[in-house]
Image (cartoon, rainbow, N blue to C red; front, side, top):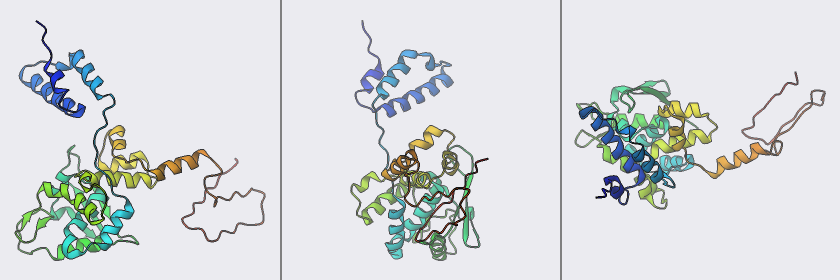
Length: 283
């Protein structure tokens, strides 16, 4: 009698990512309880790899820097102050939902005009630290100070983000819904596609688009794997344009000016913003 494997039926119902998750759980359970290593079952692994071909995982939509600034500037504080502060922490620190939920009041230190935040509990058990600084558009430090000033003095909860009315910590599911509330305020299409991973993906994408190296992106989010870190970066047309300009060397920017070493006429630049000077030596 031909016995059809159970995972064949599951492949008709579940996505490839769910199949890999189930396989990982079974592999761990069988190794611990039965001392059986199912990773040697090559047919199962080959089948899972085959099911992963052409599988496109669903990812949260990302918020651009301009959209985040628009929300922080225009959303009324009497309604969105909590979400605005969570957004600042989520973007500057590439927070996960669980990390936002576990963040304690004592994990944030105010040093002058800078917030130093320590993430003590992370998924990979390695604490990381980041800073929040005011910029020319939005003063996120002032938003934090306003939020803390409204915090009840006698509350016993150690969590930073709490419901002021009852003094209870904000539940983890609410953190997952905050990006959707931002998308609704900004009237973005399909706000339900902005899920709990939105802050983390947006943070990695904004940093990458600013010209940061992959090492800096990995350090921001605490990723060990380069491939995992790259999966959080949303491709955008602006980055494609920059790559195209780098390919067409000498035509990348109309503001680029070349001056020979023998030139004695001097260099005058006017009406140029955010310019970069690259000095090359012929030696």
